Structures are given as structure tokens and as C-alpha cells.
Amino acid sequence: MPTVAGTNGEVIGRLGFEGYFLAVAQVVADTRALGIRVAARGSGAGSMVNHALFVATANPLEHRLLFERFLSERRTSLPDIDLDVESERRLEVYDAIIERFGRERTAVTGMPETYRARHALRDTGLALGIPPQLIGEIAKSFPHLRARDIRGAPAELPELRQLAARADRFGSLWELAEGLDALPRGYAMHPCGVILSNAALLDRLL
Image (cartoon, rainbow, N blue to C red; front, side, top):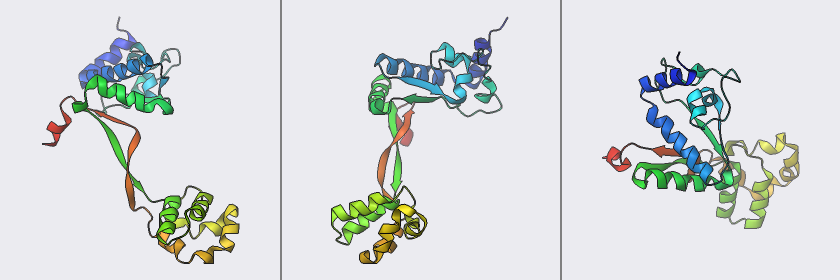
């Protein structure tokens, strides 16, 4: 009589995803070996294979979780196996992945940082010669919002009313800072994206 894990495994095998599941299981094992807490979340917990590989701790049979929400032969893209790790030790996990799979086959994804209100105000204020401490206080008083909303925020947010009363002191600061909205400010390391390749990544670029 076929088991649930066996049935799940047959679907995974027909889709050719065995290596993917084993790679994730290895990452989880290496993370735990470092004493770092790691847990699977989302629909991946509905896979008995993930449970058998110690990726997901919840038993999908006991909790009546549906494997089909996680993976189906009707959908041929790789399923998401979301892993949460301790944020303060995330870089240790990255190092372990690189050591395990090799630098030539591993990369950390990046993401563009674009201007939002606080950074736009800081950089514009410094360019206008506003003292760093003062522009720092102004920028910090703004919540996390789009730079394009800077001029409208003091009228809508009670915590900025005191700043609105002296807004004219800073001349074109507000308009210039708004003009930076969504422009690239730099690149940062993505907090949760690692790429593993079955061949040297440079070979894929040539």
C-alpha cells in the first residue's frame, strides 16, 4: 500500500525536483549543526517529504495539511520552501551554504535600494548645507513613506505639525527631496535570497 511520503515523492520525482528538496534539506541540517534556529513555514509544511527530511517539523497528516497546495503536477515551477532563520545569524547561514556548495555555484542575490523619504531628506539636506544633526532630526521625524509624499505628510500626520510650522526655513529642501522618489540610491544584499546552481555560475553567463 503506497504511503503518503511515497506518493509525494513520486510527484517530486516525475517533476525532477529531487535535487532541490535534498539541497534544502542539507541547508537545514547545516544550519541546525551551527546551533541556529531554523523553521519551515508556508505551504511547504504540507509535504510529508519535507517532514521526513526534517525540513518541516509539523506532521501534515496530524494537522490535515494539503500537499496539493504546495506542489502539483499541474504547476511545473519549483515550489517555495520558505525557511526562517535567526536574523542576527543569517550571514553565518550564507557562509555555510557557500562552504557546502562552493563559491563557483553559489551567489547571494542583490536588490536595488531606491530613495524613500528619510534618505531623500538626509542626502538633499546635506547637499544644501543643512547641518547633519539638524537634517538627521528632520529625517528621523518622518515615518517610512515614499519620498513623493514628503510635502503632504506634515498636513496629514499630527507628529509632523511642529515641523510644518517651520517648514519655510528650509527652502527648496522638500521639493528637491521629493524629486528623488524611487531613484536608485545603491544596491544591497537581499535579506533572504541565495542562488544555487548545478553548474558554475560564470559558465551560465558566457
